[in-house]
Amino acid sequence: MIKLKRVYERASKEDGLRIFVERLWPRGLTKAQTGINLWLKDAAPSSELRKWFNHEPEKWDEFKKRYWTELKDKKQTTKILKQHIKKSDVTFVYATRDDEHNNALALKEFLEKKGET
Image (tube, rainbow, N blue to C red; front, side, top):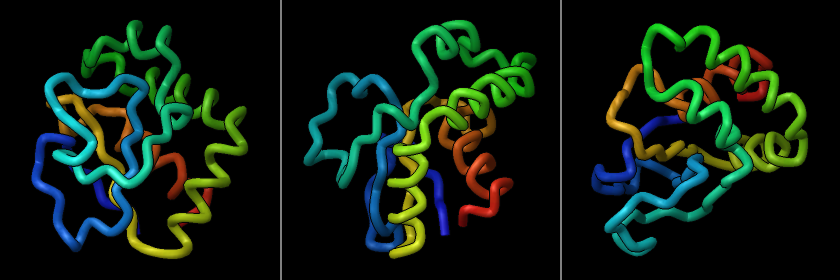
C-alpha cells in the first residue's frame, strides 16, 4: 500500500517505509526530523518539468503525462520502488503544500495504473 504525506507532518509507525520523492531537500529540516528512510531523487520529475509545472493546477493533466513519460525511462528507480512496495507499506513523502497536485500523487497513480502495487 502506498500512502502520501507532507514532509512537515510528523512521522508515524503506520507510515511504513518513508520514501522522500523530491529532487530538493526541504529547507530547515534535518533527516532525523523527517523520519525519512530513503531519498529517491530520481523518482522526482526533472528540474525542467518541475519549473514548467510551477504547482499550477491548470497544468496538472499535462504535468502527469510528461512526468509519466519521464518515469517510463527510469526503470531502475521504478524497480526499486516496486521492490519496497511489495515488501511493506510505504509512504511517499513530498514537500509541496498542494495535496492534490504534487509529484508524489502522480507517482502513486503511475505505479497503480501500471499494476505495480
